Length: 225
Picture 1 (cartoon, rainbow, N blue to C red):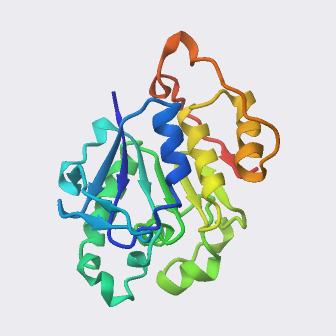
Picture 2: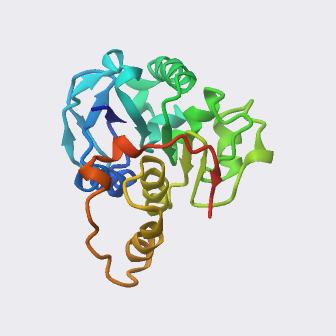
């Protein structure tokens, strides 16, 4: 079974990928592997202590179902509290470029969209972030405002981007990408988690009792509805 990789680092915005991770594991029955720049334990923005399962060098695109990049001040390369990471981000960006070329989906939220822009992975791709000026500020050669979509989360092919305020929408796009819920149940899920409307009913198992990885399709549509 393929893995969902999530990058963990000191100061990561732990709430941003939280809903997506719970659905990936609870409903999707997919393995989640935490990835660090080193094996040293990290402390999230919310104070949670996490010891990475593996380091970047151990990531394998053949075993990757999805790569999730949470937000955090690290991405801006400004706060000296996170200077230990500044030189390591470039190696991460090279890895992301390679994974993208191999067809591995990447989901980035909030500040992590900065590194997607730095790596050139947003060129010709519909995307969002905290604001187009936010990307301009931290990526001088961004120059891609024509593809910017003012929405909480956007999916274009195998790339998902979201603003810091779009954790529910971020989870929704990931759910859609991985086929965690049937298409006709996703809006019901969204209304419940976003607005508390209705009562999200328990769903049957996926076809033939398979996990979500078995129904992951090659969806190339742009979806920011």
